[in-house]
Image (spheres, rainbow, N blue to C red):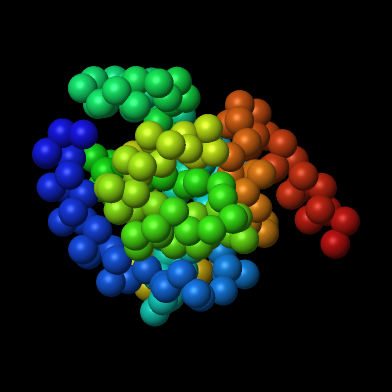
Amino acid sequence: MNSRFLILAAVFLVCIAVSLPSRSEGVDDTMILVAKRQLNDQLYGSTILIVKPLGEDRHVGFIINKPTQMTLGKLFPNHGPSQKVVDPVYLGGPFNSQVIFALVQRPDSPGGRSVRIAPDLYLAVDSQVVDRIIETDPQHARFFAGMVLWKPGELAEEIKRGLWYSLDARSEIVLKKADGLWEELVGRSERKANTI
């Protein structure tokens, strides 16, 4: 990978690694957010996010249904393993969009400062770990450029305002093809809300 990417990633990861919960922390606080139809926002409208608390009422998340036109091969033309990954890179969010993250489905941590998101889903933030996933296990991963960060109390306020449906975090939703996924989940959430 190019050195500019590694330097940017290293600087960012020093900042975020201090904030992320330890790998041993429970995962029942992780959730999937589905934008309600009335969320009219150019970036967040019709989105699905996986969200993990950082502590102190702050949260980090990734938009899981916005594939870009970029692939790892286009981003890293001199990295052979990246050329073999045909799936698009997803827009994870507006913060640090120059950094590539990986959500990988596996029973154990891929290493480094990876964070357990669901029982069989890990977020890889270290560039060396992301590289290793690209090289050895890309078929069980989704790659994101950037992330979403909420300030203290910001996400709670958005939920209170009724902008999001909340679902349990499950890897089969996170790694499902993005095409039509929002429509499926918002419809399911609306039906469930109407029966309560």
